[in-house]
Length: 333
Image (cartoon, rainbow, N blue to C red; front, top):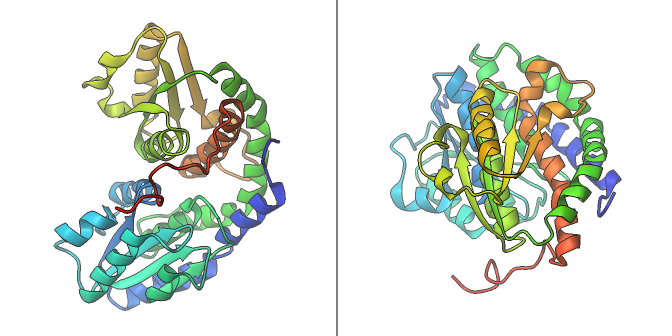
């Protein structure tokens, strides 16, 4: 597979899943200490990656769990923030400046801080109260967030399926290698057909909306300098659909949760307008070792793996490195 370091990929995912005992112990300690609200704080892609777990808690729990943009939190605050707040941060490098400022801000309010990162000596790792370290460059953070939020809800009697999910996550590294292999031919064909496409319209909903936003902003825009429109499938019929034309390249991201019919509805409509609609549906992938209910919960990880293959092939056909930036961490801001 193009640009795919299979052993490294497997090791990274396994290192995140292996944090389960420490995550569970930490959650138990937080609850015993009286934590009664949780903030999930990130910047850019790590902020978007928090949304499915805010939604998971919102659907199942009365515990206040909400996501926040690091920079906005510092200037706008949060009424719940205090000594009974646990704040979770994620950072691949452990150096994101907005996150570092947010850590300082919430600690001044007395909150307990937790970070997931791949670098134990990084500024973020050394600034928080509790750091849980995976292999360097491990991405995404969905595994750790599933375990953290899932354990919280489980201990509160609000997530009966947590033990099953946590057990099945042990199968994730091999399952995702399998997904990458399944996706490779499609990814190559998609990239070849879209080497000259300069505008994409992306649709997703429910817990998949986070990945839709992330892929649009962080990959197609930031890493490939392509123009995009992204729209939540539940909001599809309110505005952005007017941009659709016969030759608009549409990407539909589909999961397996209860919001699926909303994305089905949007998909059915766009296929009436555009002749270039590609559906990336997690149902199309074999996931050995995962039950139907848990497939829905790991759908963002599946899509991240699938679209990782697409990204590598777009990089090749467009001769545009995924590491190339004009402004991000290049100019002062």
